Image: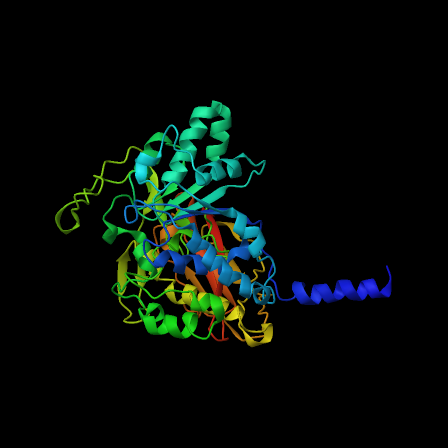
Length: 471
């Protein structure tokens, strides 16, 4: 190899290799959005694009919903992509892999401008439903994650046609790829999908009463939660004003900030989430697999004559789970399903602010997340009473920032019923002793390592150690 070629290769490595942490196999993601029904879809799309280098974005499809029954707005998606196009070169200075406008624009599609199940059946195909089928037909074994921000009837039509036109084996293979997360039920096609495709991976707080939904943990003023980082003042300072064309495109909050964002937060490669295991918990919340009790949400102050009636679930789904969380604000413990999201609120908001800064700043002017390492495996098997030293040796920060370490148990994610204490040792050491508790049967314990840099804003990344304890 000639010297000039060697210099070129080394220069490319310096440019991309040093400032881009390794990313595991990219997840395929296709979004359904009732954009224009509420400004929060535009808000969520802007955040989504700031993480789009971590995914293979397969589609951005405009749909209807209970809040927008008669029109779809793909042009609004395109408008945000126009702003993204302007900042795309700068994003690449911070991490590689951001898809270009030219790659994303052809993937903007639209469903029928028809509400719910009225848009499902013979003669109800749309470019959106046909695109979903085309994506599922690809010879790609990876799952297709489908965050649904409005009504899912475009997906319902694709499933209806797959079942009608494909062999049973082909249909099963295609449906097995799907991973669906719908933000509550925003039309009657969601319940139809769950009933007619009982093996489909599906995450949802069912029903039309949003007050019980897990996704409310993203931004609403819930007891114990930090409301400052989701306030209009914070958004103006950190996202909207002085942050280039993509920040300027971020609309003001009307009802609640980014109610749709939890559908993809757990797909972000931050070391905490395992989307195939919603019961592990992460930025997008924690969910358990069970048949929920029937609750008629269309009553009292929520009763609306033009809304569908709730019906009992006919199968198990991934749905609301509760965490017990100590608030850093008042040191009290709060228990509930929204807590599974708001416990991470400061972390994911700081991360959002940092990425928005990437759209205008040079690499050395911005902050980038630390890169945690473990000296041992992320999966450990230990006997009762056995001891080990948990170690984050080798953890680095791309900006050379000082880092803080925190080890803690995520009790609800494991099966062990007790609480682990690291005392008398401080949990903020980079290396800490751990002794397996005495158990009578095999149990799992989830221990989270959180590494936070001292940059501005402070950014956190994680490692999850799952310890299997045997008698």
